[in-house]
Amino acid sequence: MPARPDLREMKKAKTRRLLQQEALRLFLEQGYDNTTVEQICDAVDISASTFFRYFPTKEDVIFTDDYDPLAEEPITARDPSEPIRDVVRATLFDLLERRINQDRETMLARLKLVSRVQPLRARMWQQQEGRVAHTTALLANRAGKDANAYEVRLTAAVLIAVITETLMYWAEHDGEPDLTDLFSRALDRLVGLSL
Image (tube, rainbow, N blue to C red):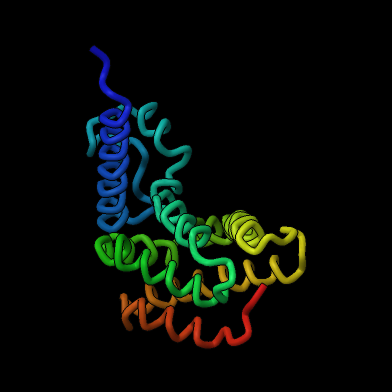
């Protein structure tokens, strides 16, 4: 009898997490450049072809997470008349409380790697355009505006830049100060941010 889809998805998620944990452990022990996909596969006892079903590249082990989908629902579900800065604040704090604080050490280790390993840092900047485009679409939909409107694009770009810079600062300072405090300070500086 075939497994129910939800059990199959749970097993996939568990394997993905295990791959990420072992990859991160090896990156921290041996260095990112000195760790091969084969070593990661050996640590989890899977084939390379299985690895590549989960992650297209070695870099993706660091960058794949489920935080973006968790942020979408609060942004779209909140009252459209609520100021965007308040929406972002509530969404970030909810995400910090529900997920990131539970995975704090893993998140910190991942971000430290990104800040120190040039190919990972370059990949992060390459992904920024996609994040800005995605955020632009979310904000435009929420506000009932055209995604090509200057204010919508600018707001999305500013928000992504603030989030990225805050996370990198936090990682470069060994997880201090508290990430919630850093985001509060960053968002307090965005006076007048609106759509």
